[in-house]
Image (cartoon, rainbow, N blue to C red; front, side, top):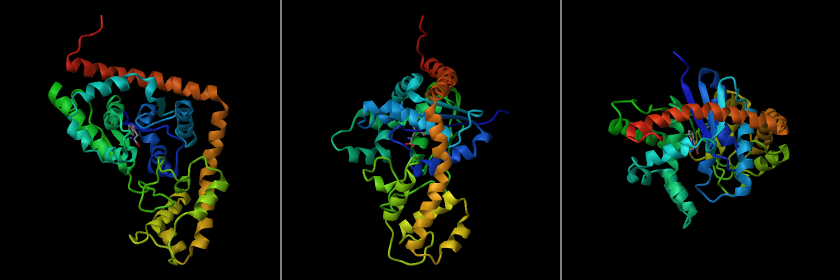
Length: 336
Ligand code: TRP
């Protein structure tokens, strides 16, 4: 039996932060040799909220370069750009027409984002999860490694696939394959540096709330120095009264590679004045190799272009086959 297939993606809105890295990409990298992987830069998703056209292509390249810099190995993985493969848009339309509107109204992330956008909500924002379903289903993905916040979208993906198979296929997995979510609990939720009860997020206006993978050592030190803490002395995990303490200890644990017991013992008597410089130093060191590799990659634009060209060719061949299965199942005529 061949390897199971993994598909995941990140939006090209600005650069990646520690939440993206620890919650998703690091897990992709650690387990990449167990699977055949497809990693997508989901630029079509990026225009569901107002975006800057002067920035979209550059951000797309940045994310692709960061995939490589974080250690994605092209031996087992294909890196590609969503909009380079028209099948994503076309399958989205076909799936739209069999997705009950009520399923989309129910999506928590849509409701949250719509609230943030106020008057400025477009149809694409509601449709976002259907495009994500198309991304996944086009590649017959077995597993989709994502952060905890994407769980509902994966359930929707399964529901849409099951509905299509039921209505237009002949049984389970007959047209589209149902994927399994793959959500790792450790690191699945990295919280904001300015509010330990909120997720670290690209869309939060305060820069100080997140550490970006490409932040300079000075920026990292400054953000950690200013991050929110509490007046208690001694540090411990899992205290609901101390969300910031739990988050910062977890970051230290993940970035140092030490286990939870070791970190708990090391930090139990520390005050923030001692812990913060330690966390800053550890973060700078953990990001240094990624940043160095990133600089090497972006120096050679031709290389990155060739990676994305090959990625597109490989991904398009698979996507086109799946799309044709769906067109056939729905009864479309073939172009003459
Ligand atoms: N919605 C995902 C997120 O915000 C990004 C995404 C788009 C994705 N398409 C995908 C993730 C397909 C996994 C698979 O994280």
